[in-house]
Each structure stands twice: as structure tokens, then as C-alpha cells.
Image (tube, helix red, strand yellow):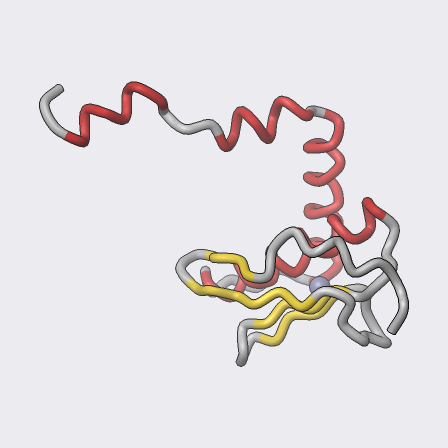
Length: 114
Ligand SMILES: [Zn+2]
């Protein structure tokens, strides 16, 4: 299959304690993305526009979280929440950095004398 073979930012994701394989450029016909709950595989269709691909990745991850936490979110609501959150993250680049920053020096208390 043609297309750029360069964009594979990761091949697996750790999602609430369960490793999921990520298949990029998957030959999907119905959806932009899919998740196989039996095999823990997230599949992403090829050639999606930049934002659509990221929205889809986040969407499938949210399905995995849903499964791991054993809660059911109606598809339409999940879609709206994920798309909304992605929009907020995009509008606030420093938010992702803030959310992911580690605790820095405060962490060292745990590693010995402190
Ligand atoms: Zn879905």
C-alpha cells in the first residue's frame, strides 16, 4: 500500500495497566479507528487528516479506559467529550506540558533521606 511510512509515533500504549498494540495504516472500512477488546489492539486508518487522526487515537484510547474502568459511555457522548478535550488541548499547548510535568525535586523525598 502506498503512502508515507514515516508516521508511527508509537507501537504500543500502556492503558490503565494493560498494554495495547497500536496498528497504524490499518485497512479499516467502516471507521477511522477501532479497538479490539479481546486482543487489546487499537487500529488507526491510513491517510487521516492530522487532527482527525489524533482525535481518533484519543477516541480509541478512551474506549480502552472505559473498558479498563468497567464503565459504559454511550458512543455519541464519548465522541463529543474526546473531541472537546482534544480541542482544549490544542488551544492550550501549555496544558499538556502542565499535566505531564513530573514533581521534580519534591519527588526525591521518596528516594531516601529527605
Ligand atoms: Zn467509538
